Every structure is written in C-alpha cells, then in structure tokens.
Length: 120
Image (cartoon, rainbow, N blue to C red):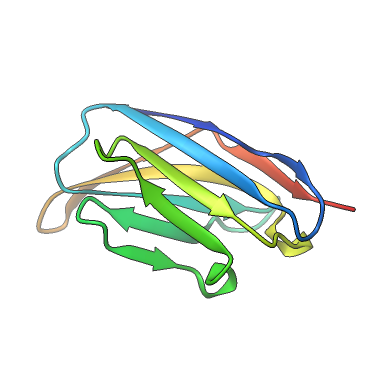
C-alpha cells in the first residue's frame, strides 16, 4: 500500500499563485508516475500534470506555461507550482501515484484531495 498526504490548497485571487505538495510513503515501486488530477463536482477527474520516476513530464494543455510539476531527489514528494491562476482552475486537486510493475500491471493510489478556489 501507498499513502499520499497532500497540502497547499486554499483560496487565491485570479492571477495569483499556489504551490501544492504531496508526500508518498509505503510501497513505492522503482518505476512509477506521480501526478496531479483535478475534479469539479459532478464531473470526471482530469489530468493536470504528471512526472515519472525518470522525470518524463506531461501537462494538460490548459495549464501549460502556467503550472510546473517537480519531484524531490528521493522521488517521494511531488510539487505543483501553479501561477497565473484563473477561475477555471477552481477544483479539488488529487495527488496520484501509479506503480508500474511491467506489461499492463499497475496500481493507482490517491490522496484525499485539496481544494483550490480562485475567486475575487
């Protein structure tokens, strides 16, 4: 099992910045992907950004140029620096860790979610 603990959400004005953090513990496989997803009430959970254990990075088009994802050297903490936030970024943000065991074998773990609200 893997446990994920998130922090850093909150209320921010349009154009402002927030930094989310997520620390993983437990059975973290050497090959993995950590990332952030977000979800509005009644909607599906959408990818925001991911970073693999070999530092391959992927962003949703809506956040490119505004958000930056990174990991610490140990690979246990993932950060999401969010700049120039707008109303459409309001959502619950979830941290994800995907252990990749080979072939199609994988396991997903989720954090509890942290609310990001962009409001004037």
